[in-house]
Length: 304
Image 1 (tube, one colour):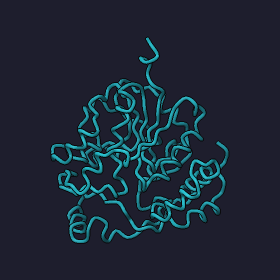
Image 2 (cartoon, rainbow, N blue to C red):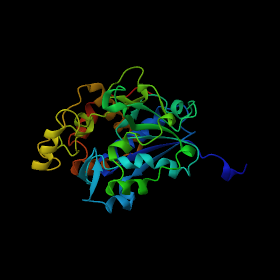
Image 3 (spheres, rainbow, N blue to C red):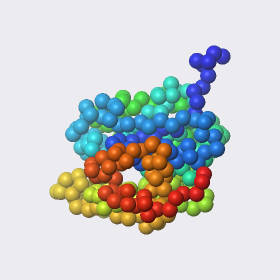
Image 4 (cartoon, rainbow, N blue to C red):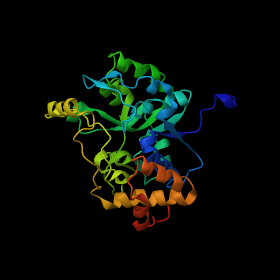
């Protein structure tokens, strides 16, 4: 076997857009900070703005949850199709983890990168119980065996949304994958707004309470499902995508706010995030305007 045939180094991919870039940089810092094997894996940030196929679809209708919606690159989560890109970036070889930019390591990601996948192509967690949302998977954290995912062709699959032959919700929930190829890991590897001694990856998944957004106008589009889906659709059609959505509110667990701003303090100290970059993000309403003051009052984190 030649060097070119060897599997690439394991990688963690973080998907983001400009609105969540500070979160992605903090996430990258947390992954290396809290791993005893930080020199054994790479971290790559994938930027939505780097891929022209997104810009080409701005304002076009696509299929989401059986309804036709308008694609908006300015939406907080316009990066989500990128979570299917790591296998191609890895040359469909090796192992990768892909995460959202609002996920922060408090455990060692190396444990996930090296775990036994038991032959599965993807390992993740459920979004809810098996009966909730038809047992959809949460693809915000996925462990990937890239060699088994050669059918993940993001630009082609993204185009199918606009041809109305692929539904975004089925795609993003892994409902289009053979069930036998998807395995489950413990919820601690994608802990939804829960920080416990067992948590390995903390996910600030409730967008309205993301600690770095407090006080800013809501700039994401809520999902339209459940018994009040008709009211959510009516709001959007009458008042626009973000009409009547209000503002981000404080996270109910102040420890999670302290964790984020403790990590951000370290990023500023190391140069991973510059003060100029942070101030620009604040000016663009990507980060709460009192971020520097929150850093000052947040306790320093214990050593890794």
